[in-house]
Every structure is written in structure tokens, then in C-alpha cells.
Length: 317
Image 1: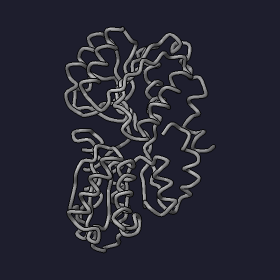
Image 2 (image 1 turned 180 degrees about the vertical axis):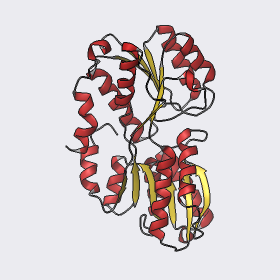
Image 3 (image 1 turned 90 degrees about the vertical axis):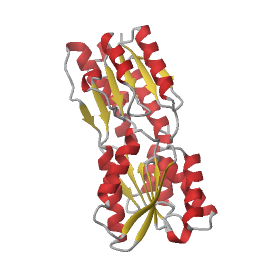
Image 4 (image 1 turned 180 degrees about the horizontal axis):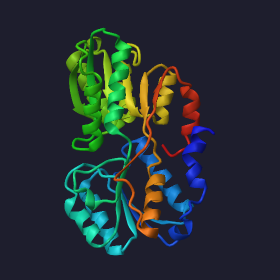
């Protein structure tokens, strides 16, 4: 089965809870569309809901927590059966989640976690964000094989769980490697535009010849940085090694073209496991695990990235 078919299989086949789902209305508070991966998650979530006969009320927060809180309160007022929340930051959710709990509306977190009591949400469907960062760090440590390497880091949105955990994991991955040093670290807010701007500032501050590698918390920032590197007269993937996270189509294309070296996959299908858990819970009160983990995979130049690009490019990225 192709990668595309695998990701969409659950969209095309009705789940055992389809009859229950036919009468279900779910609110989905999405962060926004700051990256290709985020757009793919939205597309797949819509497809999952449609295939199950679920009415999905969608709210785009445009990267603002206050918009998400307003949307959640709107969903509560409308009496939805459940809420999907992809939280823009980790803190500041207790009050509105308590309101959802008081209304007996279960909340499922998608792709990010929150710093709130676990009884305020049903479950969180995420990858292991620390593991993703650790894989990136371990890959770079192996790639450099003891050679000195000055690293610049493009962080995700300040205060978000991916930015916190992917940084932590990367630092764990390069721990004990005295030849590896992070010399600059700044948020690029998960966007291509800011990734380019911040990479330009790194190149200006450090000088392109002194930067050995870039670690970006997502591929979109890395793709923006690639443009900055090329405009500086350097060869991305050669003069500056690049490792990032998400495995969006453009990252695979960049690896295929020799302009990026590695990416760690984050599946956009968080909704499938989330809706499975909600259907079981609403049908008979079955409590899911507090954390439903999705899988991650490392892609490098050793993989057929052109083929993976062709399989992923129509998934909504």
C-alpha cells in the first residue's frame, strides 16, 4: 500500500461507530495554517469527519490563543458533542477546559499538549515530540562523526509544546558530543517567511562559512532558510547541513534535490485515532489512554524522496 493510501485508508472506510457518528457534531479549534503540515492536518481532519458522517464545526485561530478560547466557548454554547483542540501554546487553558468539562463536553488534544490537569481533557493524540528532536540530534551527531560543527537552530512558536520538546530532544541527541555546539537559537514561528528572515540574521551574525548545520523545528522554516542560504551564495545541504521535522512534501523534494539532508515525519492524520477514541467514549464510556502516540520516521538522502513527494503532494500540504 502506498503512503498516500495508508494515510487515507481510514478516511475511505467507515468505522464501527459510524451510526453513532452520524448524529455527532464536533468543534475543531485549529491553530491556523502556518505550515504545509498544518494545512494537511486540517484537510485530513475534514476528510475523517466527512467519512464518518460527523458534522465538523471548524474555527481557524490564526495563531492566536485568544481566538481559540473564544472558539471553544462558542462550541460549548452550541452544545457540540466533543471538541478537538490543536493548542497554539501549552499554558493558559485551565479555565476554558474546566468550562467544557462542566458542560460534559469531552476535549481531545491534537498534535500538541497543554500544561493543565489531565482530568480536563479526554486524551492527547500526538507524536513523541522529544523523540523527534532526539532523532534529529542523533542523526547530526552521526553525520558529523566527531568533526567540529557550529549549529544554528530555528525554534517553533515560543511557548508551544513542539518548540519546547523538539529543542529538548535535540539537545539530548547531541549531549556528550563536544564537537557539536548550538551557537544561535531563535524562533521562526514555524513559518517559511520567518525561517528565511531569521536564517538571514544568522548568516549575517555568524558568517556563512562558520555555520556547519541548521536544525529547524519544522520543515517550513527549513525551506525558508534554504532560500536565504542560496541567496547568500552558499549551497544548502552541502555547505550547511539541514535537518528538520514534519516530512512535508517540499522537504522531500529538497532532499531529492540535495538541498536538505534529513527530516523526521509527523503524520497529519491525528483525527483518525482521535475520532476512534471519541466514538468509543460517547458510545459506552470507554476511557482511552491519556496519550495516544503516533509514529515518526527518519528520511534521509538514502530514501526515494522523489517518490514520497509524489505520494504526499495531494494530501493538502
